[in-house]
Image (cartoon, rainbow over all chains, first blue to last red; front, top):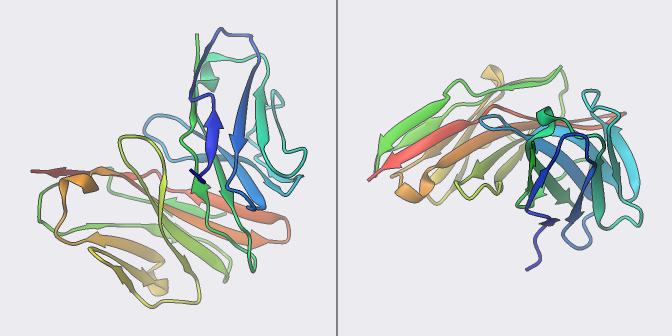
Length: 115
Length: 116
C-alpha cells in the first residue's frame, strides 16, 4: 500500500498527558499537512511542511502543539498536557507540489479521546 | 479572508435520482484552486477533483460532474443517477497561494444520504 499511513489509529489518554502521533506520507511527496477534524465539521488546518521546513502554522494552534518532520519524510505531531477539547480526529495529508499548488491525499486519521 | 460555504447541511435522495451539492467560495486572489473531497462512513477523505481558477470548463467524470462559475464564485458538484455507495459527507475546499505559503480551507461539508 503506497498511501498515507498514520499511527496509531486510536488513542485514549487522560487529561494532562502528552501524546505523539506519526504520519508517513506517500513516498516522494514533498509536502505534508496536519489537520484536526471534530464531529460534524470540516478539517481544520494545523500546520504544513515543505520537505523538512515547517512553512505555516495556524494562528489558532496552541503552544501545546508541536510538529516535526526531521528528515523530510515522516512527521510527528505532539500534544502536551492534553485537554478534553483536544479530542478529535487528527488527519495527515501529503502532496507533491508542482507549479505553486498541489492535491492533498489524506491518511486514515488518528482518533484522540482525552478523558 | 478566504471562506467556503456549503449551505446544504444534509441531503437525502432516493437511488437513481440526480443530486447537486452547492459550494460558494470567497477569495481576494485571482489565482486559486478548488477541490471536492468525499468522506465515506469509513472516515478517510478521498480526493475527487481539483480545478484552478483559470479553467472554467466544466468537467465530467462518469456519474460526477462539476460546474465552475467564477461570476457567482460557485463550484457545484452533481451526481447523476445516485447510488447508495455515494452516501458520504462531501467537502468543498479552497486553496490560495501567496507570499507566505499556501492557505487551505474546507467548507463545513454536506452529508448526502442515498436511500435504496
